[in-house]
Image (cartoon, rainbow, N blue to C red; front, side, top):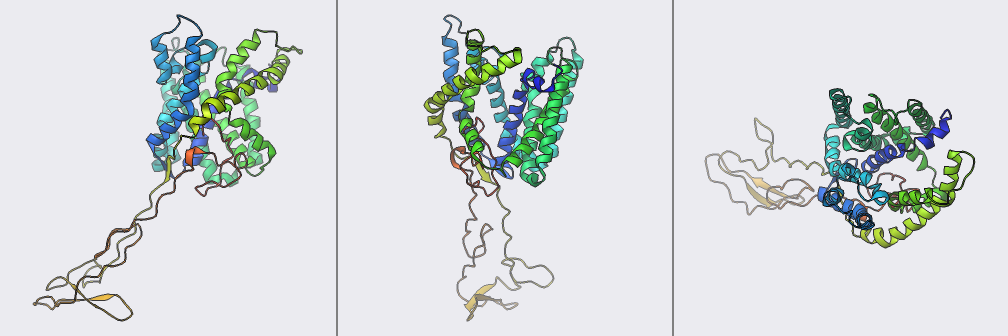
Length: 434
């Protein structure tokens, strides 16, 4: 289409790229400068994703008698559903869920790399993946399906998840620099990007440049998301609270919408209005969206929500460096050593002086130590090693993330501040990512 606005509809597949970037962004904004418990994180991911996923998987394999195959079924559960097809319209979105689960398996490890090596670590991974995709294409130009490689596999999509993580890091560290100007520019770039992709027939006739297009697409959406969230959090209101409410059912909406779309597309419920774009928009607004949202609310409250209450905390603050030991008396010719022995024998603490702690009475050179009484315990330093004569005291406990991964969204959440003291990110409470 020559109309840039219409290309946003025609190239609607870019919504997958937007979702992949958003996934990395949301997880990163809550985890900057914190540690993730891998096991607890994965428990939460399973509780968030699998209840509804498994229900629909069994619906998918039960709708056609005699069509069950163990191989694709196990692939869908593992999750490797993006490498197989199962369930027709019911399983049409399973591939994206499997891809997300693959990201979840890597996120705690990627977070540790970012914490230790900085953003440049993730940039190097993106560069390496781009080089590998390029090599794969050059090694077999006629045999590589670029649409499959870049759209359906982690080899093509991992860059977008990483770009989302980088956008989350920038947002947390430099949100004051993200304003309406950047949002306007990034939205214009997004429309221009989709128009250029459409004019080049990027999906219908993929060329070599598709190996790097995922990075262009991901970078533009990362700028849109980071700037949008920065602007939105300064403008709390009724609209954002309504979006948060709808966001609770976003996962159900995603998994169910294709079943409803495929049924309506072959029925008399299509509302015709002018051209194909106008017809699609009208039918979606009047028929598809209301029907999908209604069913999604039912599956959310009946299937998803009971399991969401079982989620646990998985974030903790990074441990602080231990306090250094308190030095003892300075000896001639060297630095103070705690508990140092003077010539002639070990130092014995003497009686306490009025107004101060007990002072050690040094032994006389060449003779036995002078009695001074038993050692008195010194004060323990919080979080530091044990001091001579006293037991170690525990340091301050780490602060954990909000229970059950509840969103601390402002304005899209409860209206409160994040538990970790950081300005919260306005994300839907029930999002598939929370």
